[in-house]
Length: 475
Image (cartoon, rainbow, N blue to C red; front, side):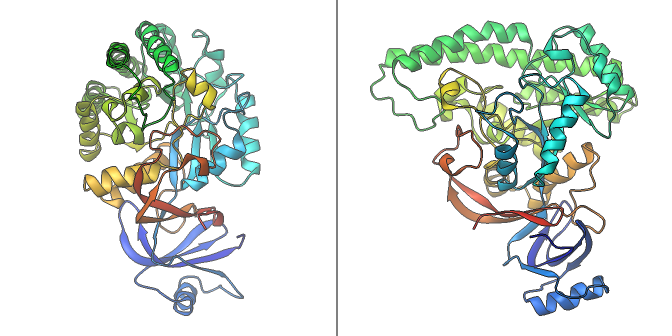
């Protein structure tokens, strides 16, 4: 669908501040009018739209939402498209198709590719290629240090916040605190967000042998990697005990790695006068560190340039390690305890959490079997969040829209995330009550490893619009 004027009617309009029946009028890729009130037929929709936009002539596109919920499309601040260099896992085309199937209009891609995206030149090339596909907007992050080598942060000087609102070393941590301080100072001067994968590399390295030992046991007993409902009746209790012991030891170290690095990075950001964005926060202790940092800033006890925001993932709020013990070896950060999961939910409810991001991390099945960490998440994100937060925890769709659309849009300085005149017409139609069963074989993504395989979720994306053009339909 490619039209200068689009009228979406017979919808329930939902953003962070409205939840009403209504219609939206789109012209040249932007919302030019919003009407609140029931509009169930095309004739009435045309009359109302004409009053909003008198210059409507000819035949605008009239789209019947059939009573579904129309929201600003989602914004994901943390995805891995594996481009360039790892296209067997994902590429721009499959990644973007997965994004729009999940209702996303903007994604921020991480730099841990081959080669590492360490220059503005390479990042611009990737964003240009993505733009040509006209499916969704891509912001390509540049690494904090050159080639992830942990010492050279000079490329930050060549970045502008308009092109590169976020930089990251995601997938690893900048081990040298002095280098991190230098990088954060450089980013702070340009108002660029530093998105931190908070994981002490030495503690993470200490956890690795335990994970590898567990994976070896899994391989020996043909326990499939990345599967939720694993049949283990042929696995001796002693082996299950050994696997559990290995993963418990690994995850204790990885929890400490996250907590230590989160505290360190926040303290460095305070001194640097920088905006730190804590990626995929998964422990109660790390979330409490973020909460305290936010409180200090609010009380005026930090530099005015310091800011701390935080994201959580759908899998960390939707699952715990005991849901499927073997999955604990297959994502970073690992699936945590119920105490940690509850702390994340509480932080969403009290406003500490700013953003929900997927950390979409596709792998081949061979890589998963070898222990590569990461889940495919774009196409299940809304359904998981709707199921867990709205249906179970009583969160409103308005608050979910704030977490998935408005807040990340603000952080990226986008003119999107609200259903209001002047905003980009990046929109998604969802049915928050539709139940469906996750089947990864139907994913647009090349990555098929989802911890929600076979699970029944509530809430489904039906249609996605990017700049007023329909880029995805479930039908």
